[in-house]
Amino acid sequence: MILLDGKATSNSIKEEIAAEVEKLKQQGKKVPHLAAVLVGEDGASQTYVNSKVKSCERVGFDSTLIKLPASTSEEELLKTIDDLNNNDNIDGYIVQLPLPDHIDENKVTLAVAPGKDVDGFHPENVGRMSLGLPTFLPATPNGIMEMLGRYNIETSGKNCVVIGRSNIVGTPMSILMSRNTNPGNATVTLVHSRTKNLAEITRRADIIIVALGKPKFLTADMVGEGTVVVDVGIHRIEDSTKKSGFRLVGDVDYENVAPKCSAISPVPGGVGPMTIASLLQNTLKAISLQH
Ligand code: GUN
Image (cartoon, rainbow, N blue to C red; front, side):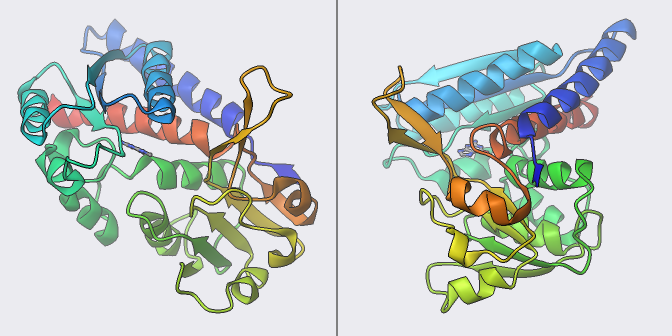
């Protein structure tokens, strides 16, 4: 069984990016500058955003963290976005999701300048991805493609089942895996809450990508022998034996599923670090668009 080690893979990518940044510096060019906007005090979002900012520093990027209170109005947030769009010093930025209920996420996504949209969430960039045109690919699906590629996982002609149809992961993942690329060229089935006989479908899969946000959803009886499993979920489960009081689990019942797999990504240390590496790759790409 191959462990799809996202932490080690993302460290290699970060080293490659750091070398690129060093080159830019030597040429007297501007280094990439990523900004992250965090609205509210959600614990998990704070952890993710801090991790993104720390990774920027590690590869030599400039970074700016804009923390706004949960009470921020939609209008105020849109003003912050407008400022970032017009700030030549910022090459790319993200607005961490989810946003408080009183803010319309669609409005926010539409307000981000497509050339600075390193999350790849703007409809223009989603459209470009669907058409196979150059664009910012959404960080989590692209991180998964990068991981599959670097581990030489064969995807061409394989049955790939994507569980979950979110805008951020499931839907773009199904598009990327079905494109005529390597990795890609898979026969993709996108399953969701209305799917009938889900376990029958997953049992026939060569590759399963689980992104529905339910702890330990994918159990051993749903997986055939030799399957490649990629776990996108991340949940805090109470655990009194841990100093923090919790431990992290994914959407996969790892302990029982892993023995049946030819390859599997762990949680933590799988897709999470790859998402960050992918965001850094997009930010490096943004600099050529901005300058
Ligand atoms: N929330 C969960 N995943 C993501 C992501 O990739 N980008 C942003 N902006 N928010 C998220």
